[in-house]
Length: 254
Ligand SMILES: NC(=O)c1ccc[n+]([C@@H]2O[C@H](COP(=O)([O-])OP(=O)(O)OC[C@H]3O[C@@H](n4cnc5c(N)ncnc54)[C@H](OP(=O)(O)O)[C@@H]3O)[C@@H](O)[C@H]2O)c1
Image 1 (spheres, protein in one colour):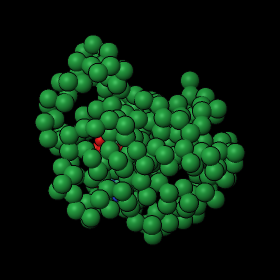
Image 2 (cartoon, helix red, strand yellow; image 1 turned 180 degrees about the horizontal axis):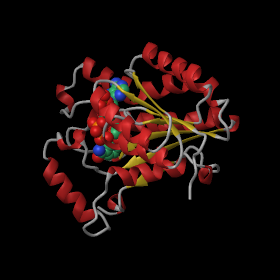
Image 3 (cartoon, helix red, strand yellow; image 1 turned 135 degrees about the vertical axis):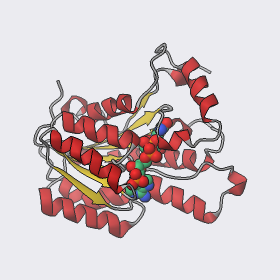
Image 4 (cartoon, helix red, strand yellow; image 1 turned 180 degrees about the vertical axis):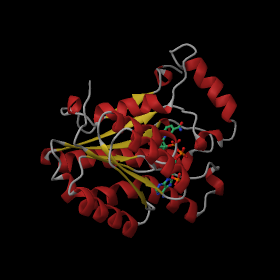
């Protein structure tokens, strides 16, 4: 049984999808939660209510993680409210699904700023709080198969995920000996608001279903959250700078 009692965890993009499942999972394990969102206040509040019903402390913080001042203010709030940070899950991501020939400079920057640069700002701002973590501090970023495979309309997001995974490895190199772990969970296709908008979503889900080695059981946000929970726990203290793939075996074969 993993216990995160007395741990403070911040989950970016915790209002919906994988972020929400992760926030709930960490809270079930005993952590107090800082739940970040950018636009879905009602969804964030509903998630926070479920966390509070578990008896955990929960704070909902609006911050656009692509904006450094927002990230800085959020970490100042965490410092003033909790005094430290034990777990940081960088989950929030965005970026429209579009062909590369149609990608504008603004599209490119928005995707990179939310999906990659945000982690740099988050860790820079959180570093003094992570140094005060109760045990080893844990930083987990959420990536996708697009970091190493080509997917339709996914060029901007996929390349941002490749950069994200590299950034995590370099953070592990630079801070890994300062009582902090930096790892990635690379998720397969999960039904969430963002993937339901994917062009050809149903065909992709059908193809994944064929490749996944779990029979009728499909990959859910909670499966990804379980892997994040492991990487946020003392059970993974010796796991550093790695990418854990959670996809039911879909990526093993062509
Ligand atoms: N779903 C999949 O199949 C899949 C597969 C592999 C990896 N992933 C990764 O898993 C993570 C979550 O994806 P999801 O499918 O759960 O997405 P989702 O359901 O679309 O939720 C996205 C979350 O990110 C938040 N967000 C977006 N931009 C933000 C910003 N600038 N600042 C702060 N929060 C922001 C949203 O907040 P609001 O609710 O306030 O808008 C929302 O909570 C992403 O990193 C994604 O790339 C997903």
